[in-house]
Image 1: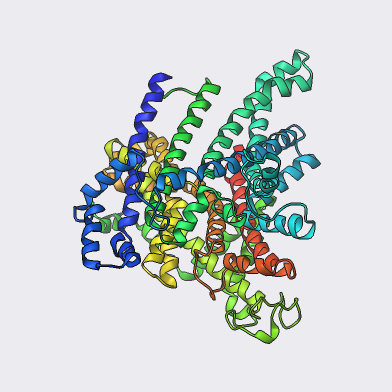
Image 2 (image 1 turned 90 degrees about the vertical axis):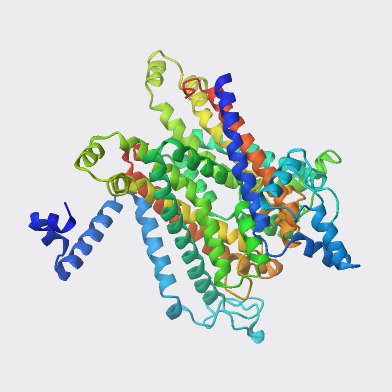
Length: 316
Length: 315
């Protein structure tokens, strides 16, 4: 296990390098240089300012040197300053991460709370009304765009019924119950869509388990159906479900951009989106790099957990 | 042995290669009826197929089916409910929603199909070649694929769109950049699939036999192994088409697609939000159109998977 873990960590290095080159190349692919953007806002002696800024940003050096310089600073957590707010990008972005993690993790927990019972029931009562409902609902969940679902929820619960606020954010550490009010709609939109995938997976892995020989053995030994399902099959069937939920959580960290902008949720996705509208390129660059890094690391953690839960997988 | 000699040696092959035209069309008809017969095995696939035929029919027939110019504004007829003149009513600028849906769908489906086709064209040879040659090529290739997969959610597209905006690209060029980003993001899935199958097929006897006859490596990889991985590729591509539709709609919903007045389901839906409380139908139609399209691809893909992989269908 240790050797495997170390090898996987070593494999992360080239992946992260590819990611960083791609993100660096993105800014290189932009027309003009950052200096033009900066000088445009500052006035004064333009030529002198240009020269100073060119030196400060190292733009007088060749591309590969700039890449190494940029990567070296990024590794120390120094992404430079935002072109818009002039504050360090690292503080700007890190302050936005908790809101996204809060939304994404509640959304995933919600999806598991829907998907696991529904998927299990659909598999146990195969071809019944419940199975049919589960399959149709999950097909709908996969096909309905989440932004449309979110809009319909706002229309119904905020505008017509007036039960919930249509957008906004309160930190759960300041006012827990108040923050839940704002959380319900976006988390439900995430939960509904992700549950669609997880329900299908739970159903098919549960069907897989139920068709195995040990289930017949357990039944022939006289164990109740309840015990067979809850004690034996469900536990095994949960392994892929939990794995997928972990991967979904990782992917959601960068995937809540749309919902964050609909619900005015101050997460990292919206920070990147706003940076795009304001052409704050260093912030976009840093945001994508940080999220990419988190996703790669989380994928590794999920994979290791999967192997820990499931000893049958060889450490090849 | 040159190709010409081979043709002379096996006369039957030559005759088979150039069948008379009527025979070819009859063969196409047979192939279609065979395909339909196979599809009937899965109810999901046949429903999806019918929905897709309607969808593609609407996309091809848009110029004839549309009743109005999708861009022409008419302030006297703003926010009208569905009527005989405007089948689905009009939007905030008095444009005919039905015609806008048709033109928007035509564009959206075209973008999705081109993007997925491009991801196949790039991804499959990439995966086949890295898998076939192995070694350093394989290692480097797969790290590139992993790097691409590290972009979560919409971020890769956001980067591409940002560059396109910075260069002040317009019209078709924006679509082109978007298509490239979608193809690049779809490529890893195809490459991995192709590579996995190649690794499995490489060991088999028929590949060994081709090599013994003297075929070159690349020719074996592409002509012998490729036909064996067609069915999983078709299934994943169909499902991917649905996903791509969702992504493109989400991007234009965010205002990062083609700018208005171009008809677009995502941006039309976004614009309708301001009138949602008083005119909920305006926001309903583009949403329903997206659902219909994605559902059609998902049903067809699911059904195809059951047909092509009977082991799954038994579940």
